[in-house]
Image 1: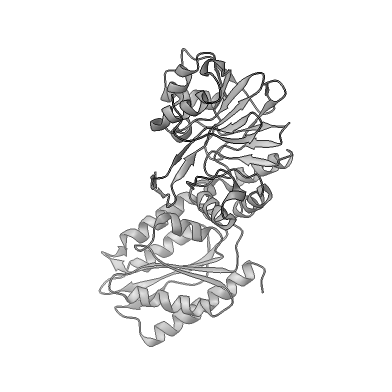
Image 2: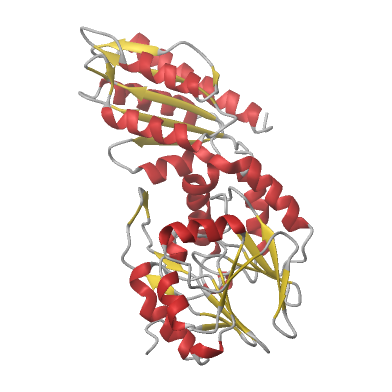
Length: 402
């Protein structure tokens, strides 16, 4: 087998052997603007271990990368930190191609893999937190991290190298020819890591906090996630960011999200934004049909206050406004304050439906829905501006910036 994606060296005997997916854009609803990588790692010592795998179409590339470094028959262990198909979709091909390998995973992961594949003929070993596999000079130590972001999620740690194979945690959907955080623009990597957290990991903040506490007990110089670049220069930055994101720590930021039919709700949104943007806060204005769910979820992660508007259609909110709020319901962004707004004509419904959804999120509701009938009058637009200023003051207060 010939490698299509060249392996990259992390340490002597530790190499990246994954695949760069430049062209993927839809990742089960997540818009991957920059593509992604499926990271797998080969650790060669007295014994050899493959840590994680890749998405099903790229089995040949993975096995080719491994074969370029060692004979496939010399791989002793395959570690599966996570059973999701983008990391384990080739596991049947891998176990067939590595005849002497034992699959190492926790019990829940082995159970999940058994539902994807016929594992009855595989050699397997179940591990729990604290269990180790010796490769010779190096050790693989395992730490269960349930619900970060599936029940069977696990970290693999190499204490001799202070290297953490972190599964999906600390990852990014980011395709690049470079493998390390100090080879690319750090602000871009952190931006993609934020989007990844917001759209995939946000519902599991409590579990993330517990995992960060476990990680704090480890000496970590390198973090090698399952997507994106490897953190070898800036692991402290991503660990700190996860600490903030796990509690949806608010910044002095106002988010105005809306959908409009004939422009009336849009004009209200612009007035709210104008009121907020003059008050020494970051203000963001998003039309839901001119951006995507991924962007909207990323922006709400660190927003302190939110105004959400919808015109009325058939006595309900607009369809894409409903899609955003349904998406947020699953992601559960916490610690926000805000209100609903919007226009209506012969029948109410849009702003009221938004208001009910915001209440359902458990946010602090700052006022009753702000409404305009048909077109917003100058008085309503003045009220919108004042409401924007109120959001900004509240955002500064919540962020401790007053």
